[in-house]
Image (tube, rainbow, N blue to C red; front, side, top):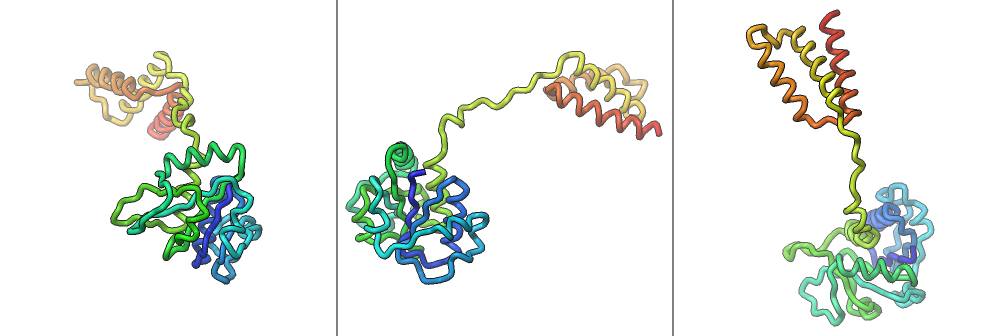
Length: 235
């Protein structure tokens, strides 16, 4: 992808590792660090199966250098009590804009330090800002979680939500009757069906089996289980 995830002044190696893991989950591999805390974050255990992203991460001394090759720079913020000088978009809207832009040009997505977020100077390099719609009383998120939520919104395909699940062939009347007959046998051998109410019980069983709405595959599974139960009862 053309997406660059830029962590500005990250302080916790585990958060860097968690961000790398989220990137790997969603197929984003370009990690850039600006003034990262000088710790061996490459060994972060939180970067499960994402060590290559950490190894290939590029370090920069300034935001300007980290985003120099990008056509769109978007900063993330939880707002707080700050007065913003940039257009602010919710994640749902911003994610669609970023996804569209990625088709033609590199985009940088900036995340600030765990304690302070992006500074005003950091934001001055951004075209606009984006926020995750969290509740006002607890607006900030863990760095790794924030990266994961943003990347999911950017890469998700709304059309996939409307895709219909595979529909399996419904069990035929004959298959349903086989399940019914075998279940009746098992219940008779178990002592559940009594001669005095045998007729009404069998009708209840037939109605019950049909309410299950089995597909053809499930009907065969039920038959297999009932055969095994019958064999155990008779042996």
